[in-house]
Structure formats: structure tokens, C-alpha cells
Length: 247
Image 1 (cartoon, rainbow, N blue to C red):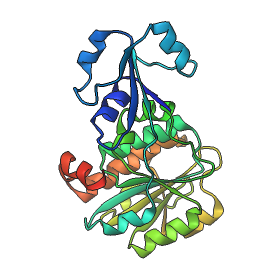
Image 2 (cartoon, one colour):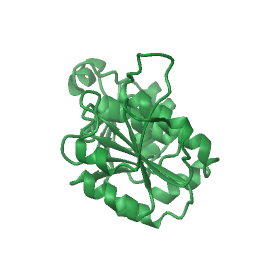
Image 3 (tube, rainbow, N blue to C red):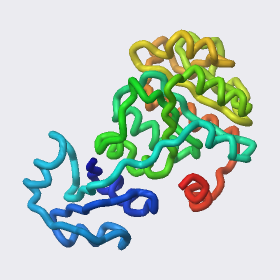
């Protein structure tokens, strides 16, 4: 697969666990913008050739990497984490790679331990997802589960509280205690959470809004949810410690 764009490529080059097979640049000067790591097997190519290598409409900014996909994680890796306050994001049938990438970006900013998806009806790792994640794909672990309901039950056994987001929620997010271990559950923009997923949530909340129009893109809703949880849970470990723990 190919990663493209400055932030996605820069983060991949810094990730010791990312296997990079080839680096494509449109000019040698572009190399100066990238970290001096893994800078072997570099090929300078014509911009038109790089355009043709990428999916239509890709904004590659003159650089691309041919890489192997990152490993995905099982939920049980979270059991080893001893932090008293944690947050993870669960996405139920969110299939747009741009949305998942944007959620990963917010998850990295606000220190989420993982983004959890089903291995079906969810986008696979791709250049588009990595570009939308702006480098966060290399930082936040992705967990893929076969059965989301079973995954939620596993989280509950690890003492996570599951908070489901719905416009029908009777409480607003800012009115509940988000300290401790929190799993923030968001559904697709069209159908929301599936009924089984919704039934397993310990709380159902909505986001406070100014009026009757309360619909948000799922990635925007996730960013607000992550920020509110981050605000209540307090400071994060240093970024270097966070990266060492997971990668």
C-alpha cells in the first residue's frame, strides 16, 4: 500500500514499527523536509508519474511511501494498561476512511488508548485514511473486532464504562462523570448505533447544542467527546512515553 502527503509520510518515517519498502519524491529538495530516518531506497520520480501511482484526486505534496500495513491490536492489550483514567473510541459501522482518519487524529490529540472498529463494515488501512489521520495512524492503536458486542463486554470486564452517543440521549455529555475508564461509542451518521450496541451502553448522552439543529459529522462529535473526557481526566503522560508503551 501507499502512504502519501507530508504528515502521513513524516509520521511513518518516525515510526520504528512501520516497514517502508520505497520512498518516492518528486525532487531532492523534498528530502530536506523529512526526518533523516529510513532514507534508503529513495527514488526521484516525475510528478506526473507520482500522480498516476496514487488514487485519483490524492494530494501527495510531492512524496509517497510504499509500505506494509501496521499490525492491528486485539482489545485484550488494554488489560495491561494501569492508568486509572483512560478513554477509547468505539465506532459502530463507520465506513468512511476520511471519518475514521479524522477520529484517529482527534484520538491522538486527546490521548485515547485505542480506536476500536469491526473488521467488517469498516475501512481498511489505506492512503486516504492515513492522509485524513494526519500522522495519527502511526500513534493510536487500531483494534479490529469480529463481534462488537463481545468487544464491549470485554471492555466492561476491564472496568470500562460505555457511553453511547445519540441525539435521543437524556443527558448531555458535560453532565456526567467521565473519570476512570471510558469507552465512547459512536455510530454511523445515517443509522447511528445498532440496537445491540446501544443496549450495551451504560449511559446514553447527547452533545449540548444551541438549538434544534444538533446533527454533527461523526468525526466532529468524536472530537468533542474526546476533549470533554480529556478535560475531566486530567493531564496525559508525555508523548514519548505514550508512544513507547504502544509501539
